[in-house]
Image 1 (cartoon, rainbow, N blue to C red):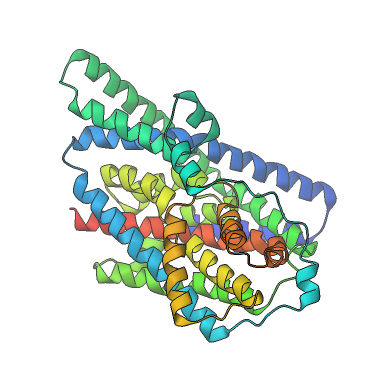
Image 2 (cartoon, rainbow, N blue to C red):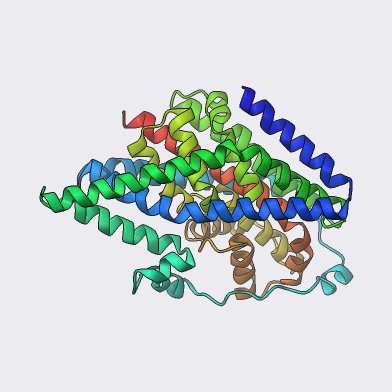
Length: 394
């Protein structure tokens, strides 16, 4: 409880500092926020690799099949639910079309990474050990970690195997000690992130919002966050308020870093130390969820695609909605995980069907806020999946 009060105080204090509009203070907060983001990213890659390898070693070749099946099932169910909630709210709130002049002045579009699904699949297959580490390619790292962990689980017991396993466990223990230190200093990071966001808002970065569209996006994320995911937890006999309270450090970190992968070290440490999820489950489930469990991304792809298509003259019928729910779920699960990944993925989908992508140029200035909420929702969903899998497999 004391920690939560400190985090909330840091959040409010940071917002107050950001709204002051003092140049040197804004630059200082931006510096601190950048340092924290880089530290989270530094710890994320080794956390993913060591978590998967050591878990597979401890489970052996037979112990993780049921856990993986449960993880995949809950991921698909929660992602589908997020897209369905987004579709229902889009029909209920019914955002209108933008004026033609606004679309014509949609703003300068960022350069879109030209990456097909074939290219994305091939790029996930590592051809050397170093490149995935340098690029932070999560899918490649997962494949490497699975291969190494599976091979070690099959390796006959010997002094050589014992040395390797002991070294990996020692590195993981050192890593989690560093993560614990970073979480101890988290209030300073929250203060800086909050001040940075408040400074952007006061400068007018998010002033040109598009009303009902933003309302649909935020409302769908909030309903998924506070209603749908808690219902999943209740259905498995878990208390949602307790789970949320225990996982609050990870949720707040995700809100400000805007990266599930960068938040992963905090998510894992918090789920084990505060929520009580078994280490074997947390270190196996959470790295997988970070890659494929994208509730917020699914809702964004669906709502934004329908909004853009509607502005291009497409009639939004039940069949169109059903098709795009399926597309958004598949796309979110296969999202490349690059910065602004959901935005670029939606841009690519809309370019492919000839929709007016200039609308996305209007959305771009306020995407930072959307991305924050989506990432927090993604990490909260990861936490729920881990808690449910841990409950089911005890």
